[in-house]
Length: 167
Image (cartoon, rainbow, N blue to C red; front, side):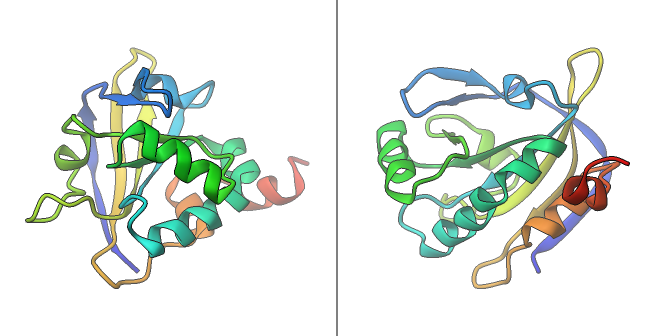
């Protein structure tokens, strides 16, 4: 599996992304009513591996959203992403980082400036600050983490509760 980075929680800025209509959206808004946010870093429409990996996560969207906010962030422009979401039949939200520094700043850009796949886990503090708790970078042609492996990265997750509900 990819290269996992466990570090002291690091405060990051409240990045601006774009939804598939071209509207600006702040990272902080993607948490919804959850304390945690899972971001799947996607390489864009040109990558067949990213398409299939996104399909896996889309299929588990209900379980993911019980745990945390969830979205996919890619490098393509909003119009390309809108067509991509429709083509794939995704219900998961896909946001564009085009024109910003989100992908590079978080370490998901290679030497040529191309987006690389991976996962980031964020937490929003009571004061509104956003902390990156963990990330997994997926080197080229390496195995990406499964949905279950990503859920285990989120603090306080009880897989049995996701599957069967709280008892």
